[in-house]
Image (cartoon, rainbow, N blue to C red; front, side, top):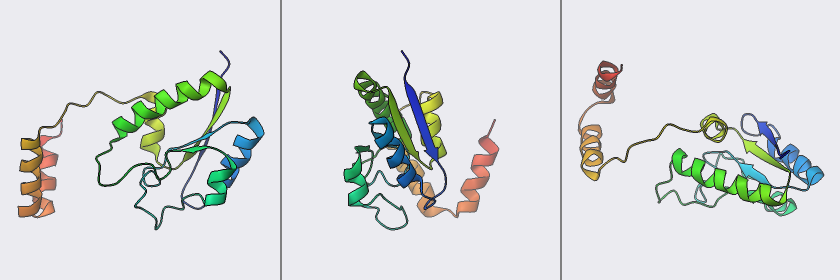
Length: 147
């Protein structure tokens, strides 16, 4: 199995998308975004999302395909992307990753630790604390509980 992943990474608006498209066209493959903001269809400002023309040039994944109204974690992203990579590699030998969110890239490359489910009760308690206390007090609590 001789599969290749080409990664185009960097800050916003440096030309990653155009370069990733060139690579995807050269290798007749697809692009998977690892940008934590471009994934949300409601975020249109400050995300440098590919244009409609760029999106039509090659197949892109994880661009404006989630709603910010629905919880979507990096753990969810990791699971969906790994399944997609497996599917793409059934037909193609190369794929292009493009983005600037290091946590998302690391989730693909190294995986994530298993995260426990957080109950609604705990979430409500934390939300109440956040709404009723200055952030500095909460930051001090976090510092005290670090290993």
